[in-house]
Image (cartoon, rainbow, N blue to C red; front, side, top):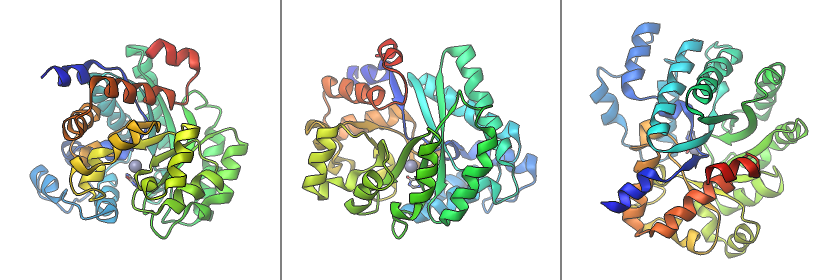
Length: 330
Ligand code: HPA
Ligand code: ZN
C-alpha cells in the first residue's frame, strides 16, 4: 500500500541497535563453522524456532550464546557490514549502534579487535555510500561496576584512534535488580571524558529507573522508556524536556513487554508530544529491521503520514550529530 511505500522512502536514523543483535542465524552458522565454535542447534531453522521468548532474560541467554561465534576483526566487520546493507535498504541515513565489549572480552577477544572490525565497516560505508555510523559502548548491567570501569579503562587507549566513531556509552542487559545507580561512578568517568551518555531504562524496570538514569547517570536519551507511562509526573518531564525515548516496538512484542502491538503506548506518547523514535533493537532476533518495525507499528496503531514524518524527524532530533548535519538529512 502507499503508506508502506511512504515508510520505505522516509529517511531515518536508528538510535537503538545492538550490533550483536543483528547476527542472523545464517551468519551464526557460517562463523561457528569457520571458528569451530559448537552451537546448541542443528540448523538455521532450529535457531529460528528457539526465538520464542518469555521475557528479556530468556532472550539474553540466546543472544550471549550466539555472540560466541564472533572471534576475529573480520567477523565484527562482516556483522556490521551486513547490518549496514539492511539499513541502506531501509533508507536509514545514520546509526548510533550499541556494542557489548564485555561479552567478547570475557571470552578472551581483545577489545581492540571489536572496535577495529566495527569501525572499519562504518568507515567503509561512509566512504562508499555517505552512510553515517557511530558507536556507543554499552556496559552489561548484570556485571559489577568494577567490571564496567575496567572496560572503560581498557577502551581509553583506543579513544584517539576511534575519535570519529566512538561517541558514547550506554547500559544494557538484565534491567530488574540492576538499577542505574549501580553505575554512577563509571558514568561520571565517561561524562568527564566527553562521551555521550544513554541507558536502557523502563523496558522491564519501573519508572524509578528512568528517574535514576536521568538524575543520577545524567543520560541524554532513554532507551526503551515505555514504562514511563505509569508515572504522570515523569511523562510531563519527558514531554517538557523533549527527552528522547528510543522505543523498539517489535522487541517489546517479542519480549512480552506488550501482549499485542495494538496495545503499545508509542502512539499515545507521540501524540502527547514526547520525542519518541522507532528502532529495531536486535533485528535478527525480534523479527525485523527498521522498516519492518515502522510498518508493523503504523498498521497496529493507525499512524498517519504526518505521525510517521514526526517519528523520523524525532530520530534526527535525538541523534548525536550537529544541527547542520540534521538539516542535510531532514
Ligand atoms: N534490553 C536490555 N539488554 C539488551 C537488549 C534490550 O532490549 N538488547 C540487547 N541487550
Ligand atoms: Zn536494547
